[in-house]
Amino acid sequence: MTGMTAARPTSTSPSGARSEGSRLGLRERKKIKTREAIREATYALVGEQGYDATTIDQIADRAEVSPSTVFRYFPTKEDIVLTDEFGAVMLEEIRRRPAREPWTDTIRYVLRRAVRVGVDEDPEVSRLRTRLMVQVPAVRSRMMESMSVTGRTLCQAVAERTGRDPGDLEVRVYAMSLIGGLMETTLYWAEHGHRDDLRDLVDRALDVLERGLPGAGNH
Image 1 (cartoon, rainbow, N blue to C red):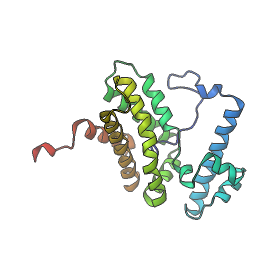
Image 2 (image 1 turned 90 degrees about the vertical axis):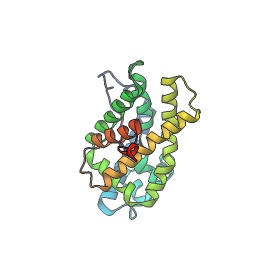
Image 3 (image 1 turned 120 degrees about the vertical axis):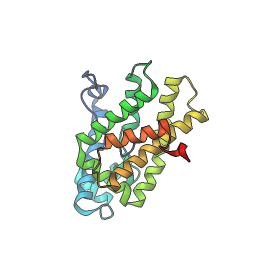
């Protein structure tokens, strides 16, 4: 999910095999390098002077590209902060799991791994991004819009595993409930100063989605 990880291309897959990213052509590698340069320039500038004071022109100058190049890769400044490869990575990770594995176990494994890769690999960037989601209304608004994209990806993954149509109401409700729960988990983590282990918070969120609200049956 957006905000869950600042996913970056890696040279190895979880099993240690060479990833598809390592076999990309020169053009694709240059695109990835440009996207990362823009992101890194944005994170650095925001850390130095704040989000509102950071302009596209400044980002372009720091990344050594033109402003038009920035807009070609990211339609808005908010997209630079929010956009990552989590949706595609999540779908690929789900496809790698054993077909007979219970769906809830698959989701728990994939999301915990996403946290480990995204947050542990670059904790400062993850904390910065999630703080911006809480503090900057434009970023939070754009995050809400981006949820539908990640949700469609998850619908596809659910459909492949269950044999249902990705457009089924039940599939869509389940997928968006999960995405919404993870978004709130990310916001909670940032609102509480990133004190908790995000993996533990993800487990708590999944417990609620699987079992319902604790104590609700007593009323």
